[in-house]
Each structure stands twice: as structure tokens, then as C-alpha cells.
Image (cartoon, rainbow, N blue to C red; front, side):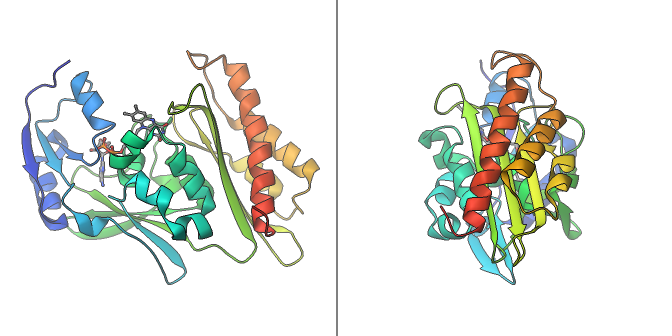
Length: 292
Ligand SMILES: Cc1cc2nc3c(=O)[nH]c(=O)nc-3n(C[C@H](O)[C@H](O)[C@H](O)COP(=O)(O)OP(=O)(O)OC[C@H]3O[C@@H](n4cnc5c(N)ncnc54)[C@H](O)[C@@H]3O)c2cc1C
């Protein structure tokens, strides 16, 4: 199908993008990689009057560690996350996530900011950010505000707490503690597809091997990305042995809200959440204790 008519504006700076968003309000949409937005336009599921293209804002393409935090510019492409030595070495859970998003053609264009701002429960980054306890920087006419990722997604699909005149400009992730590790695992019908189910798990251990932080995020098993809070609680203070991992995996499955669809029946998806959580936690433990 052909999109409806729209005005097309190319922003040459963050300030200009925000001014355009402020001017047009809910009538405007940001265009980043376009790999979620353009299909919506073509199916006329979205009909913005104005597109604000941010692809020339190269100062939003970066990954750098500073002050105990990883800063990722919102316009960073999946392909760059996937290929980054810093990400592979220090944040393998992020490399796990980027490499299973769609296919190389999509990953050449798709941005981490667009993946989060689109708030599709089937997108892979939201679960990983929920597990990592990321913070998102929203920049608007009056400056920046920091949004904890669990407050970024609302109770509705495809909706965030970003205001129409705000741009998502940066993602901030705590730098890894000494004994920390995470993993993202995704089950898909075929390579390049959205998840049947996906699980992100991240843990931090103290010197005695007890869990001081646990994050679990679930992909495509509910109307929104899910933070499996009760499963996380079960892990805190434990030594992350196989028995507690199995218990947390059962709990994560209980917190999933899958529906039956062309990717499979709800019971199957729930069972896959249990299996994937178990495997992701074991891999997180292995990475936290020096393994691969
Ligand atoms: C064939 C195919 C398969 C795919 N498979 C997967 C998959 O397996 N897993 C997965 O996670 N994703 C998948 N995707 C989605 C892809 O990763 C998207 O491109 C991504 O989710 C959106 O990023 P984008 O940069 O393309 O954003 P766009 O499509 O440009 O924008 C998406 C939405 O976010 C808004 N937006 C974008 N950037 C910002 C910003 N900085 N600030 C505020 N709002 C912003 C836009 O206005 C729009 O509403 C697939 C896409 C395709 C076409």
C-alpha cells in the first residue's frame, strides 16, 4: 500500500528536531531507521502530517563508557552495537540482543532508540533494558529528563511516556560490576523473525556468590515488555544454584501473559519462557563467574 500524504522535514540538529516536534505536536512523527514506522505508514496504521527525519543527527550515534555508565546515542544502529568490541567484551547481553534482531538488512538501518520508542512488545531491546535497569534520556524544549526504563513503557502496547515534543536521545546502562553477567535468549520460528518468546537475564553477585541484583525481562509474551519482578525477588540473596534458577524460571513463566496466535499456543509460549529463563540465568551465572 501507499502511505497517506505527509510533509517531510530533515532535522540538522537535535534542537531543530525538538523545535519541529514542539511545533507540530502529536501530528508529527520522528523518522529514525524507518523499519517500524514505514510499514505502519504503508498500511496506514499511522498517518502523521509531518515526518521529522533525524538520520543526519550523527552526534546521536555513539557508545562510550564514562562515570560508571555506558552511554549509547539513540541513533546508534543495530549493526554497530553488534560489531562493537566494547559491547561484545563488556556487555555481551547487548550483543546477544542486537544480533538476533531481524536480519542484516534491517540491522543496517534500525536504531536502538527507535526499537525502544516504538514500544512493540515483540521488539527485543525492551526486555534487555528492563533486565539491565537502564535509564533513558528524553530531550525536549525545556531540557533533558531521565526516565527509568520501567517507567518508559506504559500498560498499553506501542505506547511510551515520551511526550510528543520529546526526542529519545540516549540510553544509559550501569557499567558492569566485577561479578556480573547477563544473557538474552530468543526463540524464533525462523532466523530474522520476531520472537515466539525472548528472555533477558542479568545478575550481580557479591564476593560470596550471593545475588545482589537480578533483572529479568520478557519479550513478546504480553501486551507490553514485561519485567518479571517476582522472579527477580526470588533470586535476591540466593547463591544462584540450579534449584533457585528453576524456581525463578517457573515464576517468570507465571508472570508472562502470552496469547495464542500464529507463533503458537499460549501454554507453549509460557513453557518456552520457563525454559529460556532457566538457560538465560545459567548463562548469566557463567558469565558472572568468568565463563563465556
Ligand atoms: C522485517 C523486519 C523484521 C524485524 N524483526 C525485528 C526483531 O526480530 N526484533 C526487533 O526488536 N525488531 C525487529 N524489527 C524492527 C526493527 O528493529 C525496527 O527498525 C526498530 O524496532 C525501530 O527502529 P527504527 O530506527 O527503524 O525506528 P523507526 O521505524 O524510524 O521509528 C519507530 C518509532 O519510534 C519513534 N522514534 C524513533 N526514534 C526515536 C527517537 N530517537 N525519539 C523518539 N521517537 C523515536 C518513531 O517516531 C516511530 O514511532 C523488524 C523490522 C522489520 C522490517
